[in-house]
Picture 1 (cartoon, rainbow, N blue to C red):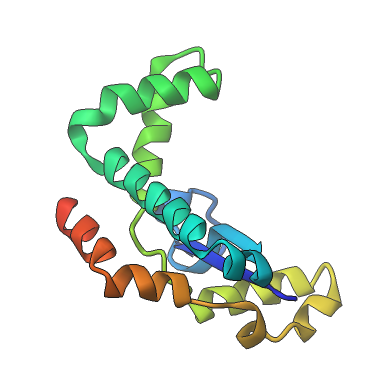
Picture 2: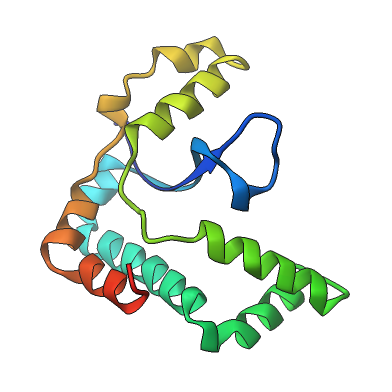
Length: 152
């Protein structure tokens, strides 16, 4: 069975590597699972996405900056706090609550990957991408409430 994918999108611009400054659609992160897992463990899947969204809300709250910077410094093994703060700034710019699938971004990713493996161009994105979990979180009010918390 094809995988289910949930992604966070960013923008990209040719010749620029700073993820915080990306201008065109490109998938940077994603959560993928086999459809049969999603069907068997729908509640678990929803809770996982909710946890990831909670993490973004925590990150976006300025009062948590110290905790996030220290966590980045420790786990990414930065010697200087300044480096962790730079990573925190970029992370805050790219970590959003835009968790819905963006076909345009997936098409861009597919185009780039097909240059390495031409078979990727044959993949039917309509068969691979499923936004039902995101739709559930929109419908039950979870995502709108989280957006409200961070002022979106």
